[in-house]
Image 1 (cartoon, rainbow, N blue to C red):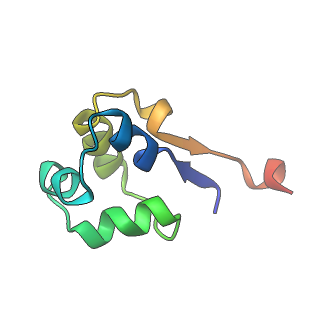
Image 2 (image 1 turned 45 degrees about the vertical axis):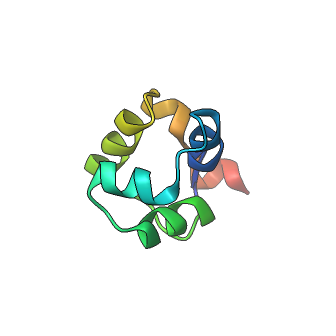
Length: 72
């Protein structure tokens, strides 16, 4: 998947924010956060901004996109 996340690391750096707390802050389920952290799900643009806001981090610090040609 060309989108990777730093959600788990950022949650831990912010006092051990739980997946449930982040999910509630973003209006999604804990399962969504689990899937994002595992790289099984790419968020919508709106959700990506909500997660970055909840983690008080710039979007580029939370998510990274690798173009398919660069991933080879």
